[in-house]
Image (tube, rainbow, N blue to C red; front, top):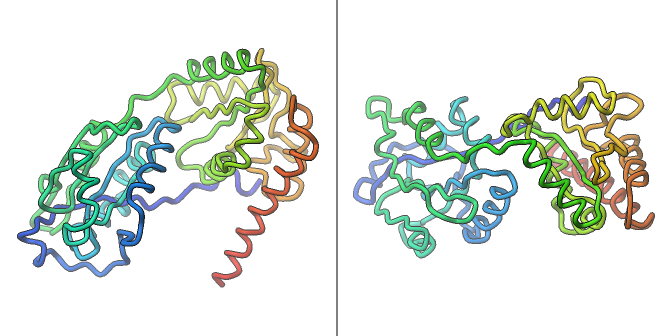
Length: 321
């Protein structure tokens, strides 16, 4: 239970404007590298577009370089200002692309309509890869403080964010698909701030896990913060199950007609993401109660995957001590 309401802390960086002609006199800022100079920018972008499509978000590309002081300055505003960082967390998949000395990833920039001679520079894409906005960051600068105006940045980001989906329409589409394909529905509720929600979603998105779950379930996520009526839908689903108020993620396995077959409420309340042994055991029991085609051996594979994820976390934690 201790993990149900843990907030996800995400550092989401942006940019500031340094033109090639003024790049050498950019304000020096001592900071860790903002841009991964060895990253495959196209692959990173493709992955971000997949996430954006699934979450109904936009993609914000931050073109820049580690030598660029204004890039690092704007990165600081994006990560430390509460309003800006929240806007990015909720509405954008952020991709930082290293352009080197304007000799790296420039073909990618041109292919997306980003024609710039200075950095940092911003491009916003929809989930179908269509450019929605191109913007240098000069307009966001505050010369007196060698920084950027958070209010202007939030206004820019808000103007291009995706329109929120209706939770009930999303739910009905998923159940219609389940009826059509003869499947169940894996209905889970989450929110952008919820780290354990993202843990569940990340595990479900692993190719081997997804392939097994898709045998029996249509994946239906309801965002309680970013879908219209999402919080109300969670409340009604809990009421139907007799569940008490509690944290998220909360999930329920349903028949295609909407009947609830099993919920994440265990003996001590909502298990959230199944992490501890007793939580994993409850989740395995949910799968066993709702399965159609999944075999016991395949459910065991899913159980072992959850255990392996926890053990990997523990090794990483111990290595950092």
